[in-house]
Image (tube, rainbow, N blue to C red):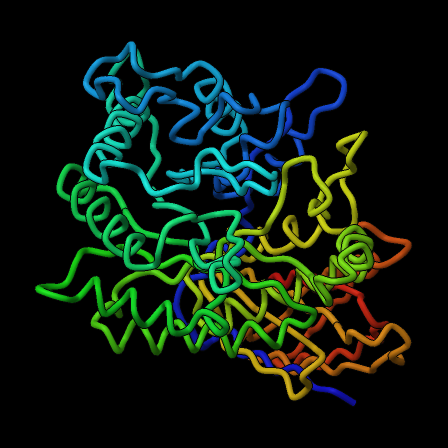
Amino acid sequence: MDTVKIDLSVKKGKINPMHSVNNGPVLSRNLGNGEWFQKAHIPYARLHDSALCPIYGGCHTVDILNIFPDFDADPEDPKSYDFAMTDKYLADIISVGTEPFYRLGASIEHGIKKYQIYPPKDFKKWARICEGIIRHYTEGWADGFKYKIEYWEIWNEPDTGYKQGNSPTWRGTMDEFFEFFKVALIYLKDKFPHLKIGGPALCSVTDSRDILEDMMTYLTKGGRAPLDFFSWHLYGNTPNEFERKIKIVDEVLQKYGYSDAESILNEWNYVKDWEKIGESYKTMTSLKGAAFVAGAMCESQRCGLDHLMYYDARPCVFNGMFHWQTREPLKGYYPFLMFNKLYELGTEAEYSSDSDKIFACAAVKDNKAAVMLTYFDDENGAEAKEVKLDIAGFDGGKKLTYYLLDNDNDCEIVKEEIYGGNEIMPHIKMNNYDVVLIEIEKI
């Protein structure tokens, strides 16, 4: 029997936003998913690969050269910018209560010809163009808006395919990228000290560990450049991978004096084998994919990650949240709804699991608490487990309400229990890939 211990009287800190996503809702009278974004209170939507989606505005959206198509134009002239499609896209995101997390740069380019992923011919001018975009959306410049958009990320995955010489994200040298990133970082932080400026969304912190270390060395040469957050990516087939890589990032940030910078994992999903990616696509849209999502959220919170952003909520093969055609929720949507219950409570409680297959997280506020747990074993035939919950810290009578996500239930109430004493030790049977949310309320 596996045991999950929870002590609601021990407060560990805040519950971080582990249910953010890449890209926003599709708002349509007949085929929209805005209401599901609202129900899960998705905190942030990262604007990466938005330009690959015609529904958002396609090649006129978000990316720097989509908004500022003539690099030789004047960045101080509003006429140099084409904001129309991005204005609409951001308004849609904000309308459902989600805050944009703006990626400044270019979408991935898999085609035989590359257009936007070469080093800008003038790094400072590129930063000035970004300044115009930020002012448009946060200061009302150029008939713009005064939105709350706190995070501004410079570039995406400069390391993808770099060592193989076929990068779809950066077609310069790494030294060029380090200089470009540092110039933009310093310039934008000077102009917007109240905003969070960071990046660069490294594809890997293990395969690209040397690139990460070299970048940090460059950023600290001649004085430490400001870095509000470091962003990075992870694709794998078990939530256990998250602990190891979160620790690597923490160690590197500490080593180079950036311990105050946020660690933001802002692209992730289930991938077992990139050479057989079709099988992983199937998993993403299944109950197994949903359990992976729940496990990743729990592990990331337990390991102190600052922010987790799922890839991807746009209509695409990586979207395990919403049906491609109907926009209705898939199994993978419900962990976002469930984790939001913990996020709203706000404070992480003490918890531990004695199994490397049972992942858990607990939150508490006043007389209410919640526990989220999932059973994830990548082996599809894994046997069911009996799980004992040892819950302490709430004295007196308590009501427990169980919500279940499995093949037959979509986060629906399946059981309620009343406990009269101080001790709570329920036993629950969990099949592989079950996700359970337990709400606890003093009565």
